[in-house]
Image (cartoon, rainbow, N blue to C red):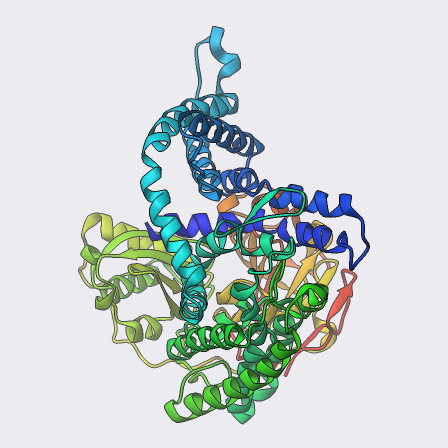
Length: 634
């Protein structure tokens, strides 16, 4: 169920991305701005059809390949469901729920029937063409059910909405706390959808009825804005104050390494209101701090309500939306005062807790003892490591499912309390991430495929006999420092160079795989950045490992979550064991295909066997392939 709800939350991001455009049109068209009524009406055209937009976006998100056929099925499904329900009971209004339901059903039906085959005389209706047909039929049945039964959940939802909207300080406070607490599992988007786009109604001067806190605020509802205002002090001041505290508490020798990251993500939060880079930097390292952050968010919401402040946003509570909607806000300057106070509170509380409790925020992590992976590891070594991993995970009977991507094991555990994290790390795991109640990710490294297959073999056979040469694990240390001058490394592709901390994948951003940088490529041919040897061409072609003569190992990982493409859009130009020269083409990528079917084409470039302190990113910005001086290793 958690995975299912997470998929809904993730799918909601695509239609939610339309909101800034809608909010901008609505705001700019108003009398106090450009006074262009048709522009406001155009923006309301988006806000007034959110249920349909959600149906389309969620269907695409649920479809395994993001197909437009799924999107069409989602739209048709919503229209059938909505009109069918109205024909039964005009008093029923499912709001965005109807779009969510239609999108989920259409996406699931697409995955099930997109390749269905019929006899020759019906073949025209087979494959993807069948998806809208089966979706329509399904929605007819659901329209009948909801047309008679939705009156009961609608009553409960309306009562809940009335309580939240009319509970004053308590209502906004509870919403603020839950909004932050649900971020780790991705369910905050589900709750935000209800508050922002469904709860509450307002009739505009033209007689149009609009729903949801954002829509009502932008259209001049004097009662709207309480559930949005309290986020501005947190996103513009509170979380940047937390960044300053984490920087101040970092170890002296680590300040330089983490300072740039904290400055970047703090400015991002202040200007745009995008807070996930900050929150994920301490969310899993120090859950206590995240709990404090959630409570302080609730406090900010309550204080803003008590000062009768109403403000809103179309994207997020950053400086851009603060200024854009300033003229239609109520008491907006008080948000600056509250924000400065919240920033000071965040700094003092975070710094005190981090230092007093020795919390392992970025820059304060222990120097983890890491197992080293050799490119010459034998199958017996993988079997031995698989044995120790399975044992540390509580045995075969404790592992419900086992899968893997480029660098990590993805597991569902029967009892996650049985795992031995210390043993996993002693055997080479770079980190352990706990998701939900039973989900677990173990960061293994580039040999994950071989380890996972060896683990699957043991699990399938129920074999937990120790390997013949299973020696006791010894504490390993990092390899010796390997230097690299600026000229020994060239940029493998034209694009925008950025710090690794800007990557949206936590494993890469926190350096679990090792230090390095990232590049947003602008062309599809990747070249070898160094003189060396290919030590690993992944079966899914999206990542390549290179080893220099001095033993320095480099991983080029094209895009995020691109393992799911199973090689589509990638063409490798080299093979394992091949010697490569600097500037030699090694991989071709269909960027347009990858952009369409993967979350991002941002490419982390990782040095997998050295410490972070040894790597220095010298340049940021857009550069040509072959650029030197981008990075040095001391």
